[in-house]
Length: 545
Image (tube, rainbow, N blue to C red):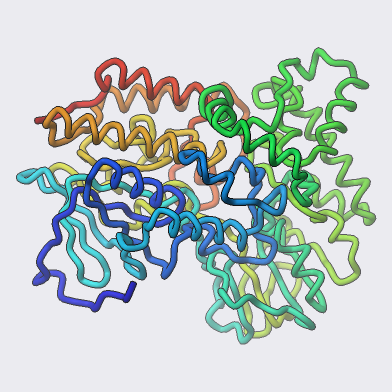
């Protein structure tokens, strides 16, 4: 589709549609498909020049999903799993992007997507009960429904180190990786950060670079992927029973995956030998299996410590230099209370002669220099810098848009003390504004494809209900919203998650309110709550004719 020509927003006539969808990742594409099925006119606005969302932007070396491929795919169409054959247990970014493009073509979605366009503002007009939306190319839309499919990890945290503009080499952010790729052959490379994107990219960059220096502030727990080709028989079985697999993932699991088998036993009830056997078995399986080794790892510090020490011992055995191994051992937060990383040869990479680990907790980075980087203790010369500094998770993309609800109140002012929503779906005072996998829903603590489809289906069914009953708007009551926020906090505080300074609570963004944003109660329990709300006449919502 050709890029629309800029025009003056104040003079441009508004295009009237039923629904505006912001974002063309997995959520936006499925939302468009569902609304079309209801006979509605809908437009997707997407900043990129193609579909894919996070899988469009995150093209850094080694980028791949940490959910098994056979469960990280759409489940709304029975034929899709039969049409598409994944090649690896954990799909890489290029393969996932090819899959998303296949789906966009399969359902002819591109004709309703406006690419290379950003939404700058979305204001609710109380006199018309419509959302007035403006873009950076001067286009204006008037929509009854405004649906934010902006993604939870779509607002990269840009580096703000002093002196960055003076750096004479090339620098990159993992969230904005050049589409043509980067060749680090023979280069001196520094990478800042040891989160998921760094853990995936470090082994590949190290294999290319003349020397790689890793600047780590906080060590991360990471488990092996044991990635490889998908066994044909396993793929056949999953495809044959896919409808049942998807139902179980949505209704009966905590994290939206059925490939793992959670152990209902307490780690403290098991003997030392039993614990080691269980941990070893799950370590060999790879992926998130270790997190389900015992039922109380997420709620009991003593139980959690057994898993944390097991991983630390694995690090010590893998990394040959004892001092480096200890730096790589997480010790100041419980196991898996930050996003658990899934890697391929991450810790082994620190045995290479051309890799150095620098602890910036004890010697913070002071500035970027023309030649490289300076910490409090030393200067380093680099040809290239890589910033794996993460995202302004869950709220960054939403608050980057000028969103205003009733009486012109901004979403930013509503969320000044942290995000508040009802079910992660809507915000009081913002009628007909929906947030797919928003704060207060399982979202990033789950298989995103399962949570996305559950939200999109709920929104589509809600809109169909409103239209069938001649209702113009829906929004939550402040009381229902407050009760849900209290519940989200209560459940989170029952676990060990708030003990970690993670992006789950916004700790990676200076000045961001410390609020545990996702719902930790589980996908199954959450989906049941959403069904009960509907069964009780959209309990907690106000529907207006």
